[in-house]
Image (cartoon, rainbow, N blue to C red):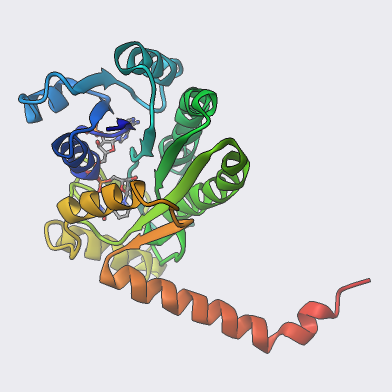
Length: 275
Ligand code: NDP
C-alpha cells in the first residue's frame, strides 16, 4: 500500500481521489485550505487519513504539510497536485491582478508543492507525481485563455519534470480532464473577470454564458475520474499524459490534426530560416 499526498482535497476531484485511495487501502495525506472539511467528509478513515492545512499560495504551508506527512507515514509515494481553479474572460478583459491570482494557484502553487515534496521522493528513489492539468492544457478556447495559459505552463513543467526525475526512479504524468461535474464552474470556485468588453460578446462572453449554464451539467464524473487516476498511478509505466473524457479525446485529436496540417502546409517556409 502507498502513501498519497493530495492538494485541494476539500471537495471535487481532490476529495474523490482521497476517497478512492482510502477505499483501496492506501494512506492519504489530504490537504486543503480548510482541512476540517476533509475530516467531516471522511469520518471513518482515521487510521489512514491525515488531513492537513495547505494553501498552495501561502509560503511555508507545503513544507509543514510534507514534514507532518513524513512524521506520520514515513514517506510520500504518490503526489497529486490537484489544487486549482478556473478563470473565465477574454484575454483583453483580464486584469493583471486577475491573471496573476490564477497563476499563483495553478502554476506557482504547484511549483511550491513540488519543491517541498520532491526531496522525499528523490530520497526514496521512487514515487509518482500526477499533475492535474486539463483539456485546456492542450487546447485553448475563447474566454479561457488565461486559465489555459496556466495549464499550458503546467504541461511544460510536467514534461520537463518527467525527464528530470525519470533517472531518479520517479514517474511523472499530466492528467487532462474534460469538464467534470464538480464545483469548478460554481461561483465558489470559478473566477470571473470584472471588466466586460462588448466586442467579445460572441467569444469570451459566450464562454461566460456557457459556464453560467453548465454547472451541474458537465459530462465528466469525478468519481470515475478518480478511479482512472488510481489505475494510472499503479501502472508499471505511467504515460506522459492521461486525457479523461470523450470530449477531451476529440478535442486533443482535433488539436493534433490542426498542428500537423499547419506543419505540413508551411514546412518550406519553416525550413527556410536555417543558416
Ligand atoms: P473544485 O472547484 O470542485 O475544487 C477545487 C479544489 O482546489 C478545492 O479543493 C479548492 O479548495 C482547491 N483550491 C483552490 N485554491 C486553492 C489554494 N490556494 N490552495 C489549496 N487548494 C486550493 O474543482 P475541481 O475538483 O474540478 O478541480 C480540481 C482540479 O481539476 C483543478 O486543478 C482544475 O483546474 C482541474 N480541472 C477541472 C475540470 C472540471 O471541469 N472540473 C476540468 C479540467 C481540469 P477550497 O475548497 O478551499 O476552495
